Image 1: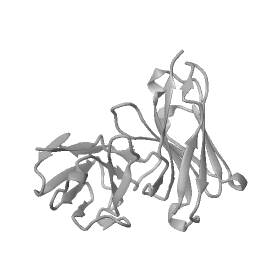
Image 2 (image 1 turned 180 degrees about the vertical axis):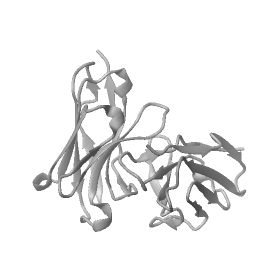
Image 3 (image 1 turned 120 degrees about the vertical axis):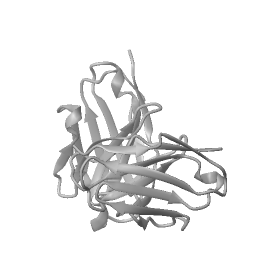
Amino acid sequence: EIVMTQSPATLSVSPGERATLSCRASQSISGNLAWYQQKPGQAPRLLIYGASTRATGIPARFSGSGSGTDFTLTISSLQSEDFAVYYCQQYDNWPPFTFGQGTKLEIK
Amino acid sequence: QLQLQESGPGLVKPSETLSLTCTVSGGSNSRSTNYWGWIRQPPRKGLEWIGSISYSGITYYNPSLKGRVTISVDKSKKQFSLKLSSVTAADTAVYYCTQHGGRFDYWGQGTLVTVSS
């Protein structure tokens, strides 16, 4: 099973600033990585797939990068609606699909 | 736009079987989302993939659930189902149904299932 590790667990950033979230896989997953945003009481929403492709309707301030084992989600200028929990997920080698434990992005 | 809706009991007794159904409406099946699956999230915790079934009926399960899971599909009703046997309090979670490829494109709103006597 591929273990996904996200860091940090909590990230405090001010609105308008840049946020950088990290995700590391226990073995190479090529570019088969997705990012999700989850707000309280809601289902996760797909943001990024293929490590760097934005899903339909996702604003350009969200960008993903990386390949192999190390990946990054960057939010270039934080809006109030961006404060949420973010998860990465690998789909290179399954079953099982595996998720990181999440990074909570909170207002500083 | 594709929509998914979970339904089923919100309370299950320990040692019994949890049963949920997901009804799919709208949209159309595409090659990029040719699996139906279930994901759960215990309170205040992260996401765990439970299992999926392909459009051709092949099932895939998370080994961590040790053979307690069965997923089936009824294409005529546009529904797929989850059964999780021998539940314990550790199975208390929000259960999401999904339609997906490798990435999870479409999600239901989720349904909370509590395991308690």
